[in-house]
Amino acid sequence: MAVDVRFLILFSGVTIKLDNVSASDMGTDQVISSRYSETDALATLETVVSEINYLLSFLKEQSKPGTNGEDGGPLHGDHFIRYTENKIKNLTSTAIAGYDDEEIYLSSFGVVTELDGTLSIDKTRFTEYYNSKPKHFAAVTTSMIRTGDAGVTGSAPTDLFTPGVYTFALSGGTATLTDSGGATEYMSAGTNRYGYSGNIIGATGLLLDTSKASANTSVYMGRSVMHTLSQYIDDVLTLNGDIDTKIYKLEDDLDDLLEDQEALDTQIANQRAIYVEKFTAMETAVSSFKKTGEFLDNLIKSWNSSN
Image (cartoon, rainbow, N blue to C red):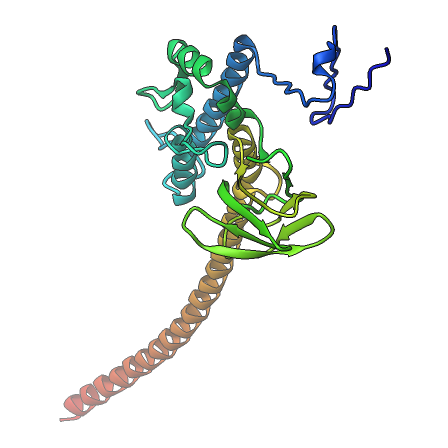
């Protein structure tokens, strides 16, 4: 008997092999699920923690104070460095939004901050949390947009959205999107596609595809820790990133200082020339007064001798 098996492939590179298909399975939708192995998940988390520690170490080196006569880091005392360090350190205590109705934290997977500011993993806590909620690990590795309705699929061509949970409602050809604060916006309608390009609520760039005439479901828009960390690294370390921008600004400030120094040197030279000119005139006048004094002395002496 020929078996007609059709799959909607969601992930590139994934191959599905059926070992057996029973007659009772025919004509019904089947659910196929997957998950990271615990070993792979832990190795991935260790890589993430290592990257965070590297970035913190780099920022610490750039901002270290000078000691024992040695120069400090080039950005010592800089507000930008402190701001960036705080953003990265807060990764462990900031909720990773857009993956579930409940809040997910990097610390839930056992990531803890040591006394020296570096991160480490409590493997016991990791195992406990991962085994109880393995689907939450996507918050560490994979940025995604999904919905609570299999008949509605989501995507976004840009990364301008704010992670979070939104509510999609479709009725009579009119589609709306509501954020967690209750603000509601209309979505533009196309052929089986609804989009939001505004910025009143955070779902900027969201596209929802469905052939349904009506729907009411949650839309989960999540940005993973790895994605967020990658953005931090790009913003801080890459060409024309924040560090380069800061260096360019400091170089511009130095150029301005050199120009001010040159202007001040010119002003000092001009002022010195004026003082020299005045001093020379005063010296000439004094010399003339001395000669006049000598002439008067001699004249008085000649008068006295005549008398």
